[in-house]
Length: 307
Image (cartoon, rainbow, N blue to C red; front, side, top):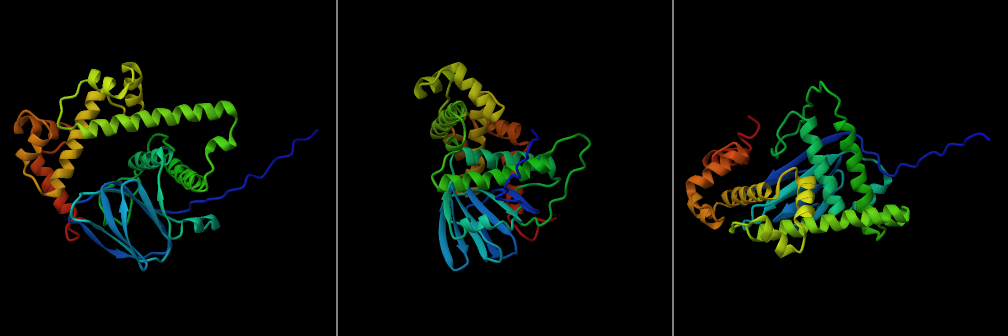
């Protein structure tokens, strides 16, 4: 009996990639707008922003994504109260299924956020440029001496993102299309991601505290071994090391918001002194708080951003 092959249907085919950016905006940032003949989506990782999409004016909040269809005028402005973090991806996709995303504001789940994070990670491997320059229109590729597969992974992750997001919105979960054993595995993954999300939210809510592993585990009803394994899998860091990174991430946001000086930020985040805060900031970011302030202000100025 001869084998008969099945042609596999492709729903989304991503062609050219124009940009992948992760922006840390100042609370006063404003991008005046543009239109182009390819798709673009904006995801709010933190805070909220005002978005113009054609004739619509929208407040896009944390966890939400909006798609701009080809030739739709769009702009983005910080609200003035919160310094937002955004993921912006622009790409070519002529698949008919893209019409699903027209004029929609969607909420991402853990799986979709993980896929976005994977895209950002691979972009850092693939492109020889900063991903935090909102005015960059050309992303030169790195010269790859070793095999990475980053370009293909970016396309695959992006196509997966579009598929899972469509499934999610149509109330069709991945468990509907896999065997029971794979469904159980998928459930465990979702549970682990939920624990991870809960612990991260807990640490973010206690940034002014000197947390210990014991206290984090006790307050979140999770074992030490399970939490250490989960944090390492998701971040590549130990728990307390990652907590230090969260503190500095919050410090960067406070600096961009421009409502507190360095001493006030240090006190708010529970550092014992401004000197210790500065040392930790430089250890994690490679810059002093003053250097970071100058850098982010320069990056927000279209006159100097491309220089």
